[in-house]
Amino acid sequence: MVSLRFPFSWFPPPAKTPNFPPNSGRTTFAAATAATGISMTVESIKQKNPCAENPVVDFILSKFASSPVVWASLSLSSQSSVAEPKTGMVFPSVIKDCQTLLGIGLRRKCVFGLKNVDVYAFGVYADEDDVQKKLKGKYEKHSANDLKGNKDFSQVLLESDVNITVRLQIVYSKLSIRSVRSAFEESVGSRLQKFGGSDDKELLQRFTSQFKDELKIPRGSVIELSRQNGHVLHTIIDGQEVGSIESKVLCQSVLDLYVGEDSFDQQAKESVMLKLAHVLDKKNAPFA
Image 1 (spheres, helix red, strand yellow):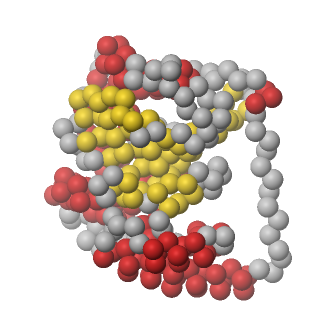
Image 2 (image 1 turned 90 degrees about the horizontal axis):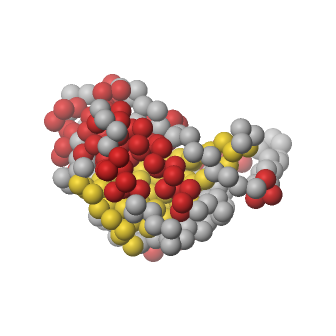
């Protein structure tokens, strides 16, 4: 992997472990019980129009945002936004044309073999109608439990052209666009060889050249890698599209970083695949 060469003085201080009050079982139970009612109320409202902003939903969520127990008890689909717990990066529950949040994760890098740095948090989104349309036929007889841990399911998703977006939100304030470009040269390059059977340097250069030196990516910047119909990969940085490339193997290689067999964050990948399995399940059970 390409090293991120940052001075030791730039490392963020270790997070302090919070102190929770003893004998908080009753409080936790009460909060969890309240969360169930809140979740049902919010879900009922949002099901009527999942893409629209709703002041009632925003009011309910704002009142309970300070409670970690309540917040953790709500499903991803019933929140207006979800925070990655370690970095605090907040992800909207819906982006683009009703692409819903399936899971969130964290990209970390080991620097000098001594320190793990949180580089960026990421959220994986998909158009659930598109998932149903393109994958339901193959898996309509499978329950969510059947698909859990199914390697074929993950592979079919990568090879399909289901509309999926990976939203990267920069955490490390000293990260440069050059470091992002170098990291993608290695990670995407290795996967192009894996899926394409050859070292396609021209295709890799077309992709990485979109990350131009003049672009600035301070903490909180957003990079979106979005696969659209026809295997077209759109790259958007802070709301500005910097390029689009039609290539099935490139889409597959980029998405493999986040939902593939050897993904950056395995727990996030499992959450995404479980949510997709529920989308395809007739019961359409909520994400937990």
